Length: 183
Image (cartoon, rainbow, N blue to C red; front, side, top):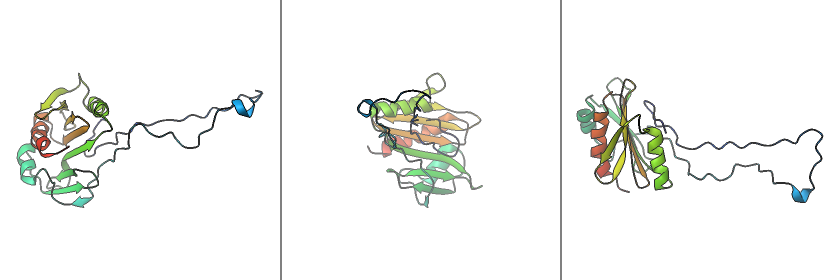
């Protein structure tokens, strides 16, 4: 999962189904020897992960406006959440009305899937290693496009993203949030 500024992308694998058409002039096989044509995709191995959106104006249950302002280095004036996920995803806004920081915690289908998502978001060799007490491990990146830290602990994944360039800022937010979210 590569996280772009302002939104967390869906982390669902796309399965493409191909239908094989018969070759012209081929003799059809008897019905007993033919395969079954599927009209619906096979069940996904991973459950679909909801892409959080700022759907309600409310306090973030695990991070305050003051904490975000202090840790991210920019005044946070509003917070919106997506309480369709548990714990709620939080979106913190600047005075200009733009999202400046997001936090999301979600559960993957397995610990291996959580690790894979972290590796896709913050690939080794392209990110700095990030560890937080309580068993959270992953990576962080920063630069002109913003900063990201993404960590896994068991089946949980924590992602913190900021419009700020310094990855140390999202690291500090993640260090505050991680102990506050419960598996």
